[in-house]
Length: 113
Image 1 (cartoon, rainbow, N blue to C red):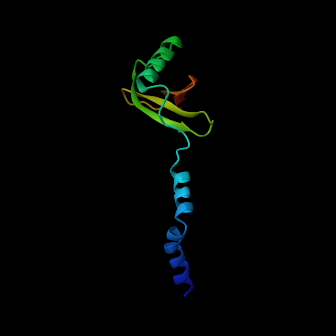
Image 2 (image 1 turned 45 degrees about the vertical axis):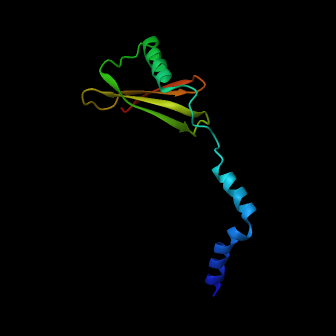
Image 3 (image 1 turned 90 degrees about the horizontal axis):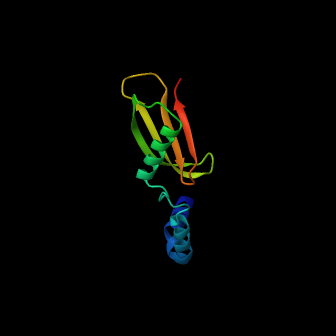
């Protein structure tokens, strides 16, 4: 009997309090942060190319394998482009990657051993 009462409450509640239900939907549906990047993908690739030239990083035997727009929750800097290179021939480790944040911060990383 208790299960029927509890179930009927959840089925009837949205109709009893439609204003409160609509307000809850607005809060849930409101985006917290825009994922539209301030730096476009082509700009990020240009920044990465310039960074590699200026810092004389050798990626001659690597190619860009992946470019993704990610949200970095760990540093609270927000969205960034993650550009990952990969070896053209099989090797263990040493792949290069860059994180390019929307404020212009660039964080390089060499993956693997």
